[in-house]
Each structure stands twice: as C-alpha cells, then as structure tokens.
Length: 165
Image 1 (spheres, one colour):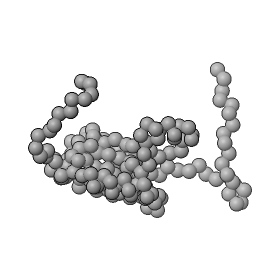
Image 2 (cartoon, one colour):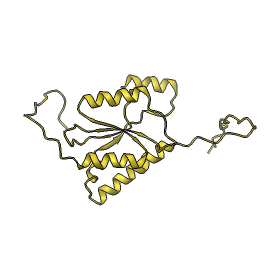
Image 3 (cartoon, helix red, strand yellow):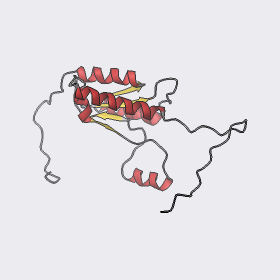
Image 4 (spheres, helix red, strand yellow):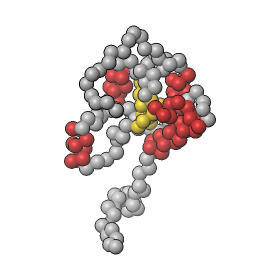
C-alpha cells in the first residue's frame, strides 16, 4: 500500500520567521455544540426538543476549488443563506432561519449577503435571527420553540405535479 507522499502545503511565516498556526474554526465548533445541545434537549423531551428533528445546516461556507464552487452555484447554492434552519412553524412564522456566528470576540462580521437573506426570509414570513455565540443561539431557539404552533388558515391546495413517495 502506497503512502500519501504529497507534501503538506506550508503555512505562511510570521514577521519573526515562525510558521503561522492553523486557523481554528470557532464558529463551526460552537455550531456543533449547539446541535449537540439540541440533541440533549430532544432526549430530555423538553419544549425545545422537537427542534432537533427539524433542524438542518446549510453548508455554504468553507473554501472550495473554483470548479467545485461553480458546480455548486449551478446546483442552487447561494451566498448569504443562513447557517441553520428549523423547519417547524411556531408563533405565526413558517420556520426559523438562524445566522450563527462565534461568540465575540471570535465572531466574523455579518456579510451584506447574509443580512439581505435574513431580510428576505423575514419578509417571506420566517423568523430570521442573528445569534452571536452558542448562548445567544440557545436563547433564540428557546424563545422560538416556546411559541404556539403556527396554525394554517384556510384549506391547503394540493399540488398535482411530482411523484408519490
């Protein structure tokens, strides 16, 4: 079995000649802890627990090869889409779009595309929030999930297109 002999790309050096440390994904680590917290709430059957089975992450971030990024864009990946979605209607909203940033001072700035997405989702009837850190994200989710289930007004109109599942 051949070993991977491809040399690891060297990081840029600091002014004193020492190699720079690998960057830390603070936001990703905190977001993973948030999902683990939701799993615990689900197991404990708390009021927040149902959110776990209805939450999903949108992996828009990260660095990709240019060709892969173009392919994903053709497939519908959009800049600015929020990090987490809870597809569970509460408090008169259709669902929750949560833009998650790491706890300050490790948080990144909100990009214009992220602000525009939050505004677009809010105007479409979703609860759209920015959370700076895990504690603020937990507070947003607790408050959202404490709201009553959103009721459907009127009768649903069936859509004939598509296949049976």
